[in-house]
Amino acid sequence: MASYTAQQAETALKPQFDTYAQAVDDENWKVVEGFYHPNGVLVHKDKESVYGNKAITAYLAKFAEGTGKSVATVTNAKYEGAGDYLIITADFSAKTEKAGTVNGKFLQIWKKEGDRHLVFHDEFEITA
Image 1 (cartoon, rainbow, N blue to C red):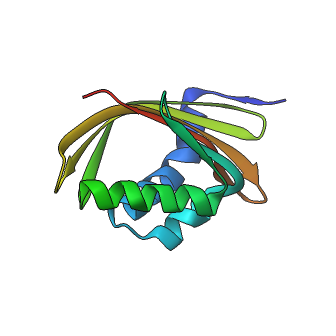
Image 2: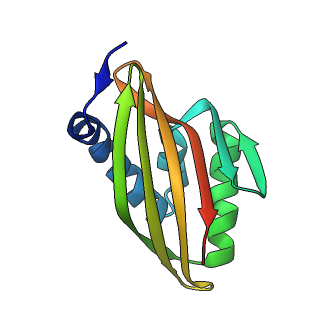
C-alpha cells in the first residue's frame, strides 16, 4: 500500500477539497452531495452522526439553515494519505449570518472511487 508525502496528499486532495468547500459556502447541496461517498458518515462529535450522502447533505443543509449564509476559512490544514485514502485535518472559522462566528475543527477521510476521491468519513466539532 503506497503512502503519500504530505505534499503529495495536499496536491491530490486540495483542489477537490477547495471545490467542495466552495459548494458548501454557496449552499449548492446537489454539488456537495456528489462529494460524499454513498456509504459516507458525518459525525458531529459528541452529538450525533448521519449515514449516506443524501442524509449528510440534508443534515448540512439543515445546519446551514440554522446559521444562515456563511463563509468559512480553513486554517492549520494538514494532509496525509495511504493507499486509497486521503486525509485532511484542519481548524475552521465560519462567519455566519445568524450565529455569529462559529469556530471548530474537522477531520475528513476521502476514499478513492474510480478516478476521484469522495468523503467517506467527515467529523467535526464546534469549539467556540
